[in-house]
Amino acid sequence: MKVAYLAFSAALLSGCATVFTDAKDQEIMIDSKQENLALYDHNKKFICDIPCKVKPSEVGSSGIFIVAGDGYKSEVLMIERKRNPATYGQLTLGIGEVIDGMTGSDLIYEPYTLVELEDDTKQ
Image 1: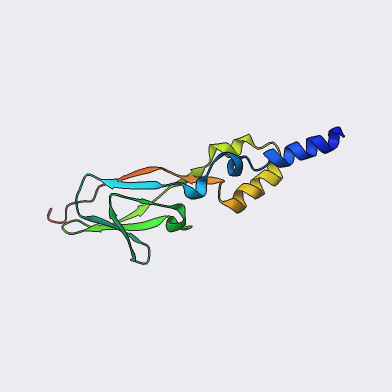
Image 2: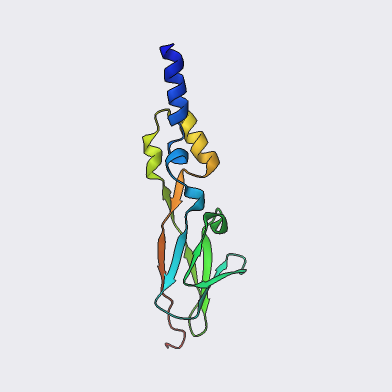
């Protein structure tokens, strides 16, 4: 009986980040002190006018964006991912890592990114 209880408890706690965080629904704020900037994906498809919030599904696996605006030099923006601190609570490393990886809860994005472009009129 004790073995069954321990196995059941381990299964419940194995996907720690999946259970305790909602990484898929995280919002990433892209902001700037400059006006009239826009965010594009790596294929130059318009995403939003800055300031805006993007979801991890819009970031994709590369995390690479282009920021552009009239009067500014365009710049590549890479949104960094880091390990979700909730993954350190894994009681069963193998199963939990697989579950968190499958659900996308093993990594989270920086919640706030401030963008500043170089003025294009500077010589």
